[in-house]
Length: 336
Picture 1 (cartoon, helix red, strand yellow):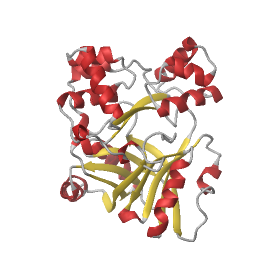
Picture 2 (picture 1 turned 90 degrees about the horizontal axis):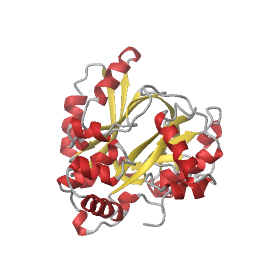
Picture 3 (picture 1 turned 135 degrees about the vertical axis):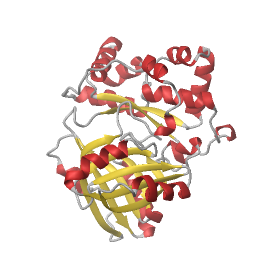
């Protein structure tokens, strides 16, 4: 594993080569509320506390999933950039590893046969353009180009959103698990102790209040109140870093779409309704939309691109790039 690869690059026990219905229900429940007590999840699923605890422990220990706490960039005044780095084949992995080690990077993927790296870089301060200089990357002429485009608007991918492969619980079960939040996003100013807590939550979104208190210097009650406040304002949400292969989805790709400005919102909303889409956003740059696509195999990927996606009349051009390796998932904190 070489110390830096994500949970998806480790060896899994044989019993985790697939998921049964209860595993899928549990993952969906954690997607709805990553910090829901296992006893509440057990009650909603109609099984014993012991069964849910055992299933969660098995999924977690086999690296099939990890709950992570994430901030909504807009709520805390942060800016996110989608970065594409094209390299000579022998340079791609060293550069990708260096990117994965950065504390401001997430979603680090090797794509396009290993000649391109895609990642998201997040700046705490919108004026901090130094994060995009990528000055800590290996200084090598084998990096051929770097393109960074601002993520302007998220159509899909955030609190309470998940690809169609997670639609396993019924509406009543989802509602029983859904955490209470404010009706709309409320801006929040974070201080250094907030960031210390967020670092712990990126390592493990289900970290105990004792762990959060130790990391921040707060009391457990203060850590609990602050976490609940950030959740209520929707500045903090919980996602599930998961191995989509366990759902039988072996093909993942990034697609970049050129769309006329007047049609961008319509296409973005259409993407958000597609079960194959795990993420969709508007960007600056030569293409106006980027999306993450998850399919069962390359044939289904082709069918989606030429069918449901390709027939959207406003799309002028589609570029697709298969993901061949994931080095880092949703969290900016690197997990060993």
